[in-house]
Image 1 (cartoon, one colour):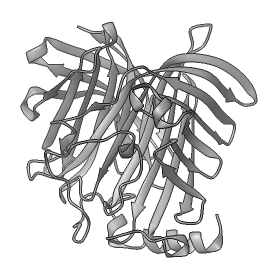
Image 2 (cartoon, rainbow, N blue to C red):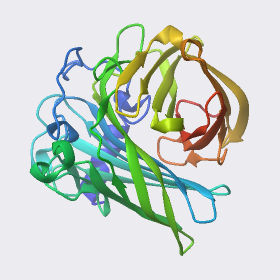
Image 3 (tube, rainbow, N blue to C red):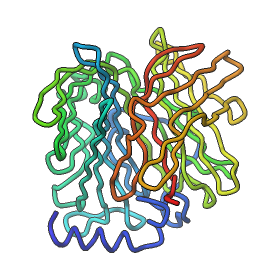
Length: 360
């Protein structure tokens, strides 16, 4: 990172907008663009950045397995943060700050790494077609232009790579199915007060490639999930964190569930159930129950790493188990992120992200 980018980052971290994390997700968003229902999504354009909104991310998780049946998980995330409303500007006038997170999980170990970059100077950014999202030498990139891509989707076939201390990965992700919209046609509500994001996913990737741990290359295959969200104030000011699940169900069905926790102990729930052809069934706040069953002490925090998830209307009840309960992302804004297994009325694998668990 160059000195000027470091100064920009430190200035940003000192502002009230960062009090709740990277984007100050519950702070007032005056001057930024708002999220409204009824938006029409367009691909590949929406794979690219959305100027005028305060926070945005490109987020990949993968459940992987080697030839001996050992399980692994990986995460790759790029965040775009606008430090001021309006057009971001070019070159050194850019108001964008970028942050990258990479994680790799085994049954015994968890690795994490992060990068920060200044916008406008070629150090990080996203282009919709041909698709590329990058920060320094980490990249999530498509291999064809829109007119050559399946369904015109420049993210149908992508490669993803990252390197950190003692770990790296290089994977290809492929699908023939178009992206799917979360919530009500891509409008994802996060609170009773109406805070929301625009949100779509690609949960049907097949993954293949190699991971490297302490210099040992391990061929792996599995499934991967992409999430894309952008907003300016996705949380209410009294919400302090969330628990998010992406689940690969039998028969190639997919399920996303989350709860956003408030300071008074209440939660707002949401989810979407996808059939194998991508048909979406949104799940209402009162349709979902999430119950923590077991906890793990991590970095001075008590984090729930075993859960019961229930959707009575669908005769759905599972218990999740973390592949590695110590899957702590020791990044500037720390959180839990790792692969899970689940059993009950349905069996499979998935990913869990948990934020807002403060140290005692």
